[in-house]
Image (tube, rainbow, N blue to C red; front, side, top):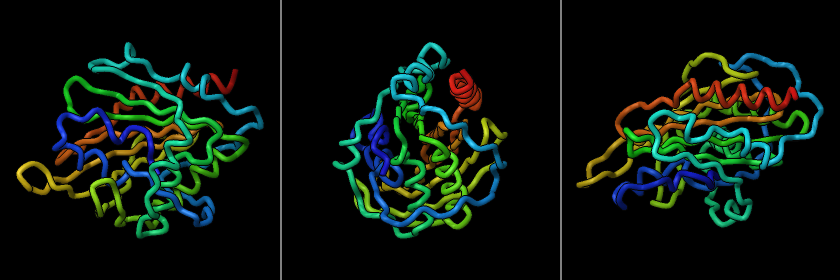
Length: 244
């Protein structure tokens, strides 16, 4: 499913298992999307019927390196649709978890821009996905994720390093944009010297008008948090562009 950044700027091949299991893989589901539900997000008004932002517009609105204190580089790249077809893995074991992954993937968006944030004080990168949708599809995508998170707790799947198991837990954060969800996906991985470590990735998913933004932050054996000031800055910028 995911095709952009979870091959990340790696520091040595021993870290490959951390960066390419679980949500770093491309997985597809042929199951129908479920209805919107209610969870930690608040209901929001329908998106206006306007032309969706293009990939070039999304790139122009993306956070830049000079806006990120303490970074080793920030990228913003339009997603190549052919990469998704070249990196397809079977659906994961739980249907609701697969729907969660599909929503994160932004596979039905009209334009997608992926970012990588390389922090100076960490070998683990952060990332974001800006996805622009037609009509109310952004609302529908958010609703599918919200519904999936009600029942998705554990799943198994196949990745670049073989089979993996993962656990999902929701988190509470301040509401940002029109609707907001936050959760973590953790999974054990074999680390250096054969020890088992815990890959821990936070996800913040925000809808603002006809755009969804997903932010993620990876750590191992610790719980990292994507900076909320950057989330707010990105969301405010996308909101302003859609009002204009």
